[in-house]
Image (cartoon, rainbow, N blue to C red; front, top):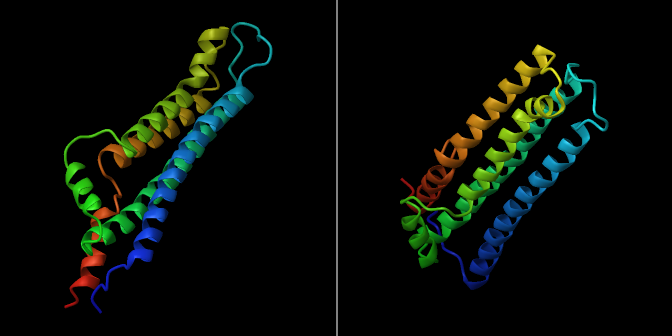
Length: 190
């Protein structure tokens, strides 16, 4: 069955869905900033500890958990972006939105909109979360120990950083091409 295309009400609904997803991505980014502040506040020492004592496992655990939670929020935003692409690709392939066709063409060149700034925010927050125990040790004169906590925090932070950069800037796991292939398979059945 070939694509029948949307009527006016369908277009209105699809555009509303796309706008809602864009808004949810913005709210996720805002939640990530808030989460960062809360966890850093919880993990910060309440009183100045004695110089030379270890930072402690709790700070490393909180930094690692923060990286994982930031990545989970980034992943959710990435899935919402994929869903936006499903809708926008449908509008483009049914010739229902000149804007979507123009926007896809515009995105072929380097631009800073939506995904890039959100990725920058997540990458910076994750980097700060990863180095947070080290910052605490420098500011308070503590030793960056236990070593296992330091290693886990660096590994978790580096992996989440790599995936955020790969997904946000290099197109890893991007769903737009897959969505286009699926819509084209429906539009032009063999």
